[in-house]
Length: 227
Image (tube, rainbow, N blue to C red; front, side, top):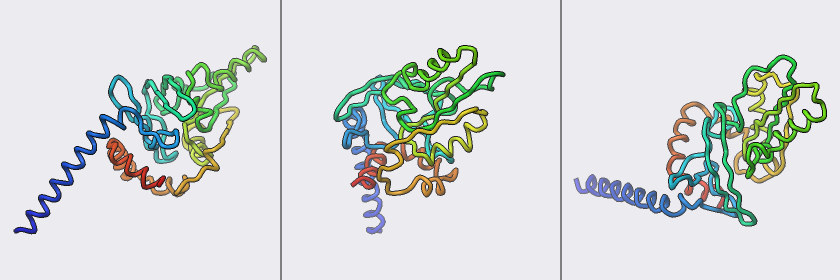
């Protein structure tokens, strides 16, 4: 009986400690963005908007993650060397820009894949290189109909982008597919994207989605990964 009471007391104590820790993080790190080496400490980034916090990324079975679909979010990035603020709008697929509809006859469709450079980190949608490329092509060859689409996601590797093309953007019938990468492919990662994707079944995505709503889980997980 005493053992049962001790276990119950211990469980209650741990639960209360978790709640206190979660609330403390929400009022400090959670709202101010927890930084590690200039980067926000989480693959699922918590961003401040109207004194509330939102989850920017959503798990995906094929690409590992994407942006959350159909959001409009004001993002403030407090880096070591610079600060940026911009609005990120996503479509129903979880990429920036309007929904990709059926290709119109005579249109030359270019879909660009990549990491933050293609996703336009820190930039308004009109300033992304995909938007500028479309303008340049239209000015150079006005007799043709050009459509340049961004399928970039911040942090994507070539593996994730090939998965994006294989399972999603190839269905959009692009005439040209562009792939652009930098540090996302040669930076250190404790687990490869390929290995991560193998274990992403529907159950693990559902569990991860729920766990990632806890800032305590996100902080502790990333401290373990990056320590």
